[in-house]
Length: 80
Image (cartoon, rainbow, N blue to C red):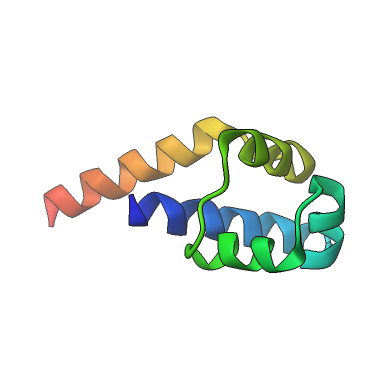
C-alpha cells in the first residue's frame, strides 16, 4: 500500500506543479486543509476515494495511469 501512496502523491505533486498551483490553492479547490495536500504528496496520508476523485479531476489525472504505472513498476521489479 505504501507504494501506491507514494505513487499517488508524486502524481499529485507533479501535476499540481505543472498547473502552477500551490498546495493552498489546490486545497481550497478540493475543500481540504493545505497540510493534508502536503501529507498526500509525501505519501504519509492517503485520501478517501472522493477526495482522490476531486484532486484527479482538478489536476487532469487519469486514474488509469495510476494503476498502469503501478503495474509497470511491479513488472520491472520482477524482471530485476
